Amino acid sequence: MVEGGAQGYALERRQVPGPPRPGRTGAVNTVLHEVATQHTQEMSTFLGTLHGWSGEWRAASDLSDFYMRLTPELAHEMRDKVHELIESYREKEVDRDTEGSAPYRVHLHAFPREED
Image (tube, rainbow, N blue to C red):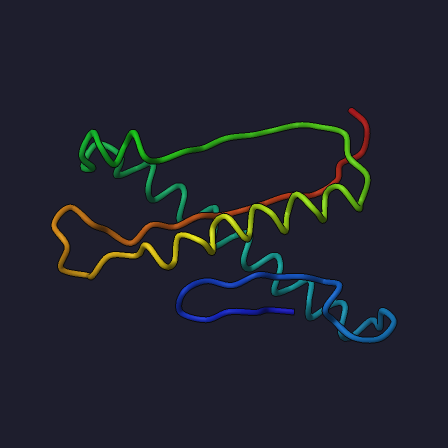
């Protein structure tokens, strides 16, 4: 399910009511793949234009990868805490005409993996 709007969104499969059904599952998977593609395009565009951003903005950007072993409960807890932290910055947002400000995009991808 998609929650949000102009300020961003959260996709949570657990919010799709009822048992999995092929038609609904396929539609949800299509949305998830489209979002992943959009995130890839946005990051690629940023990396391609990195030279045009100020040193301050380059230092404020991040491309990180963290690996750990968690239970579903711990992963859910971590995801919720990260969402809360990100949402806490909404009250600090500056006006559009604030010097040096720019729209700032945060992508969060968190998922289990098979053993390597």
